[in-house]
Image 1: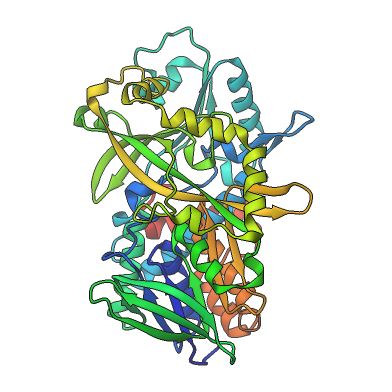
Image 2 (image 1 turned 180 degrees about the horizontal axis):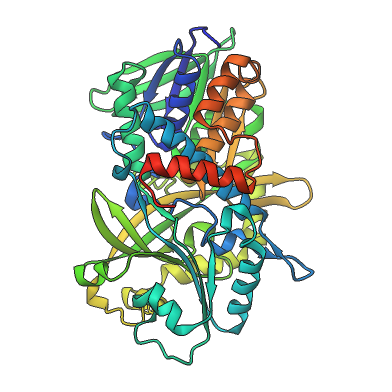
Length: 492
């Protein structure tokens, strides 16, 4: 594909399709990219600001990315992996700013310190072990730790306000954390690709089916939702980045690799502060420990967000149950996804994850007053009248058939590719958007191996994402952060 003209179709106008479109067009300007999105605006599902945590997942504060091993030592490997991938995303975004595909970085990324906060002896001991395992690593060397009540009050005063001074608490802080509006980022990438006539974007268009032709191409059936017109288009490569809806389309492709995969939908709901005086007092992302059985997207956090230039304060997300795979989807989505190959895996995964089922049932039953009571663990002075309930996005947790266990519920993201690399889809949830650059580069490596290994593509990749496939040692970590933060307008 170095200079070969190929037809590429993207399904879904979220951050994943935006990232992959940009990479492929930069690597090979000759490709012809068509995108189909069923909504009337890009990035209004999983990538939308209110449907996404927006943390800029970097392992700084998310306690579910670290765990205790059986011998009592702390495993930080997942946090290191996620943090490295987020640095790669920042490199890619800096490239986009330098090459005028993004006009102003503060439209999508802003500096917001990241905190982990816990109380009680057990969780304080956990956080201390986590800090001791992390702060010597180059990616986390800015991390600070404190059990001092007054120090933590200086860091996050609203969280400590009216809290008993004798309460055993601990917190970690990293000042270089960020808040990211992935919806705004995706929209600007698409807008500038379209301006430069490097992509054809079709909103209000739904992909209905995919069929493999005899010559190895994909025959894609599309419906114009405004006119009702149906038509077909051919593609050499298809990427399905349709959020929770990806699995339904991937199943229609009938590729061998999707057999045995299923999905379990989990919805979300925020508490959103409507009192501007409270919002102004908190400028931080404060993460705590998740309840037993909670999926990663439901780790509680008191979260400063910058959305369309305005500061907001969110808490949650609380889990809600729906059989929809998308916020704008159908209640039949879950049932449509059932196949002979995956129904056994889904039943067994459900049986093995009864704690998740119990958690979801408990969450669904919560009243607004009970949700505010949960918020008071992080904000003791919270008043019911200062907070509104607002629906967040839908996520679909991946369930995979397993020879030993029958079915395994998988958290995180999964990329499914056909053996010949002609079709790929992204399934799953967090950390997703924050690690989009790494996910899409690995997809390119798998689906376009010959081109990926060519000198031309390697040269261009080292320009767009120089840290891909290399270890971030102390010196390089400082260098790359200084460079990307300067371009993106972030502090060091």
